[in-house]
Length: 262
Image (cartoon, rainbow, N blue to C red; front, side, top):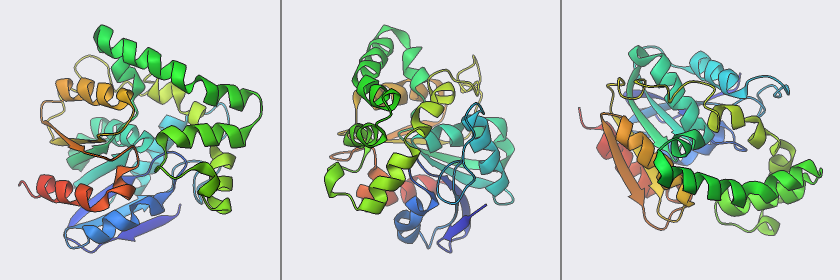
């Protein structure tokens, strides 16, 4: 397992990156919070230097196992982004004794919106319609087109053709990992949303989202905020889904405030 460490602060943290990235996603945030946190980062299955994901296996369970293996000793702050946010939340619910506080950047637990009443279900249905071209391109075997369409919605705002060739190839080679996460994110295979699970979690949770992100993000955060007893919500205006990277200093200020409340 490839492990990276960022910062030298007194608080230990584990950071779980988003799909199609790797543990290096956290370098800028680690530098901004280096006096407060020592961040441990790792590569999710199929990403970075981690072993390839094997089709037919549960990538959500494998991701949680990798996160648990990388978890520093004692109580830590858990930080997760997108798919990594769902992994971090799952880990926190299963091992609450190891958790101090939780920070979730746009956790893409789509099932939370789908089961959150008619409003959330309608937003989730619209999201599925909007994402259909991505999956159609994948089924047609056009990974580059699927990657282009996916990053147009979920990327950092840089047009596909302007991304470096190596970055485009990295994303295209891993775009199949997006539908691989559907059991975890759309079907809640990890049982995050089972009755009473979120309601019984007694640790502070920060939900962060970009003001320019797709509506499904707000619907997911609405659902989680209602069920988590100690949830705090922060929206970074002008930011999209990649806010830890595109708006690092805004994010760092919010984390410094949230993590310092002890």
